[in-house]
Length: 117
Image (cartoon, rainbow, N blue to C red; front, top):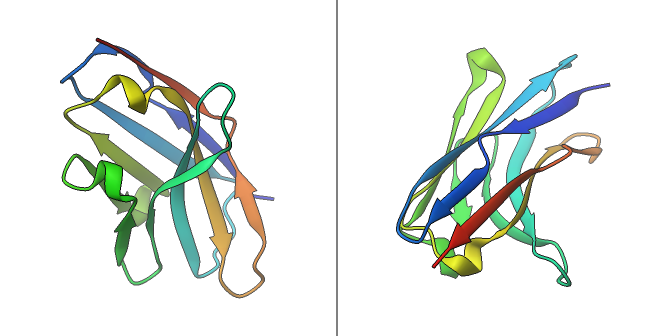
C-alpha cells in the first residue's frame, strides 16, 4: 500500500515562505488526484489545494495567489509552495492521494506549519 510522507513544515514569520513536499513510497500507479489539506487546533480539517491527474489545479479562496501546488511524477512527489504566509495559515498540513479508479484515499502523517505575527 502506498505511503505518503510530508516534510518542509516549520515556523516562520508572517510574510515568509515555506515549501511542503509529499513523497509517495511503495508506489502503485493509479490515475490520481493529489491534494493538500490542513487542520488548525480546534477546527475541522479543510481542503487547501489539489491537482488532478491531468494537472488541473484548484485552491480555496484564502490561498489563491499565495500558494502553488505542483508535482514531479518522476519523483512521486507533490509540492505546496506557500508564500506571503499569514498567522491564519498556521495548521498541520496533510497530503492526500485519491485513486480515481478505485476511490481509495491515502493520507500522510502531516507536517506542522506555524506562522507568527
